[in-house]
Length: 202
Image (cartoon, rainbow, N blue to C red; front, side):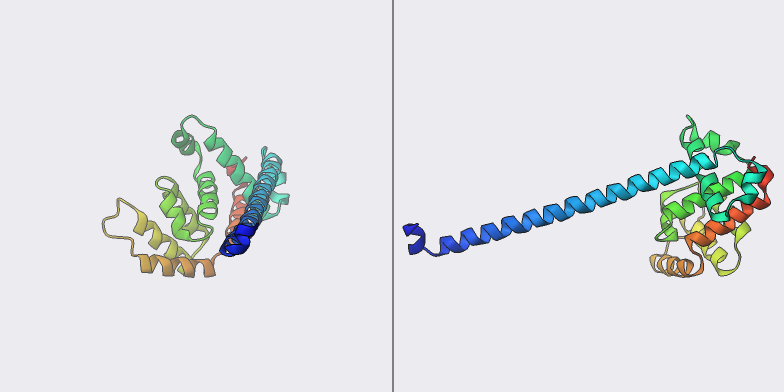
């Protein structure tokens, strides 16, 4: 103690270490709480998806037409995703789907992978998914939104030598697309599409 009194900088160092320890503990606690909340949100989402998947596991004409469009789309899409992901050969299983089913399956990934930016969907996926998504989107939407979708499809298409990825253009198109079409709009429109083509999903 006498040594420390004679050398006060040691007291400063000890105080600094105590403060640092407290700060680290607080940060660790906050990080742990954040991870817990994130895990809790994931578990809640998985539980909700499981309930929705089960609700639409067996489609009937009555179920399709009485269901709210957005909910119908999500339920049908979840079952198509499970069917494909559980298959030994996912591409072969995808090929077995009819065009209407392929459209719903593809649009579900437009929402899932392109929720922040449309370009993320094209960066994460390739044919035949992107091609089906383009066909589906052009069937359901028109105008500027469809033009942007096709532009980005061509930009990220490795087989298209006439188009290329221009970062500034992609960023602008991502922003414009988000203003024109929301995820909920896609869900609602796709759900109505299922209702109009109910026989293709039963």
